[in-house]
Image 1 (cartoon, one colour):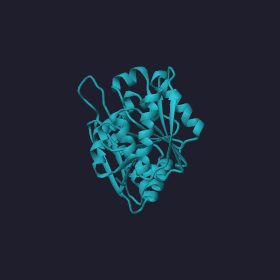
Image 2: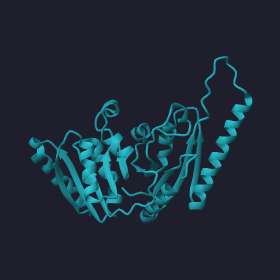
Image 3: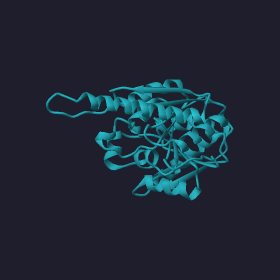
Image 4: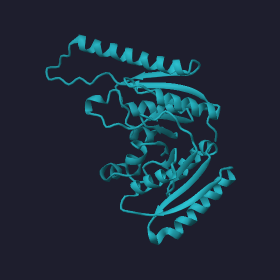
Length: 272
């Protein structure tokens, strides 16, 4: 499947220059149209006596209007012919963004940030969004403004999420100068891992993508092991399935999804 529409999610109140640059470059290389979107909630007001001064509500409404207009202006300055969407709702922002993703083949967004309870009115929980989107998500770190695609590393596991991720990544894999598919396994599972990888590499070849297989020995921290491999290869992009086991376990123990994909130092393409 190709990519006909790229949706780029702008977080209001923050500069989105690098994000827009990467979204535009990807759309250009894939000959895709661009849609920009911003989502936010009215401020959460905590009170005891049941009364909220009307000027506070009005100030928040005006701030939302100003921030949305600024985000739209930033998007239109970069892509005058692009489509713009904005959503204001009391419901979780990840829900709305996931629903809007119905019109896109690929969503480009920023990394998951650590935010306080009081900052969620402008912030989308990326973990929730990825699990609901039904679309591949390209996660871009805040300081990143280019994505060369010289080398892509695919993190492979025997899971439905990995199979979806590599399928969703095909349009980008076809643009890559080099592709390495990595599975991290225990010593007793290395032969099986190599067999898995040989199948994946053969499948990619049938899709006109030349890739190299790499079975790597597991350590106590597979996320750190995969991160080290990505750094050793100088990869521009990491492709992986998100939440291969329960999200509760990921958040409690840490894992590839939380530590390496949603909050990593490089661009990641994830699918769930």
